[in-house]
Image 1 (tube, rainbow, N blue to C red):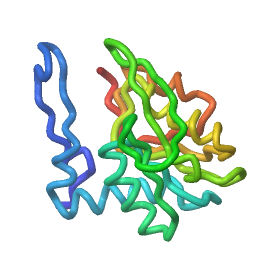
Image 2: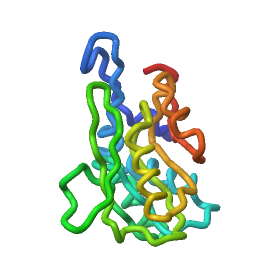
Image 3: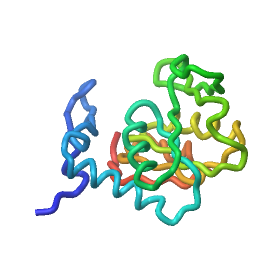
Length: 175
C-alpha cells in the first residue's frame, strides 16, 4: 500500500508541554521513501516557476531546500542563525515566543533581480521565514514562492506571509 506524506510524520502528544501535539519531521527523513516523497512534493510546488535559487532556513530547511535545489539544478543558499556565516552578512531580527532572534545571509548570496524560493520544514508563527524573505528583498531578490512540508494552521503563520505565494505539503488545523 502506498503511503501518504502524513504517514511518515511522527506525532508526540504533550511535547514540549501538555496539550501540544508535536509534529516530528524526522520520521520523513528516516525513511528513504518518505524523504523522496517530501522532496518530490516540494519540487512539484515550484515546477512551473521561473526562479534562480533556493534559500533554506536553518536547520531542516537546509535538508529539504538543498535536495530540491539539487533535483532542479538550482543554486542553494543557507539562511543561518546569527554568527554562523563566515563572510560579510546582512541580518534581520524576528520575534520568538520569548524574545528575539536574528537570521543572516551572506551579503553576496543573492544578486539584485534574482528570483528566489524560500524553503523550511514547518510554518508555525511564520516569523523566521518572514525575516528570511525580508533579507532576500534587502539584497534585491524577489521571493516567488515559500514552501513548507508542514503547516500548523492554528498558529496563523500564513497571515504573516500573506504577501507571498505560500504552499505546504501537509496542513494541520491545530497548533
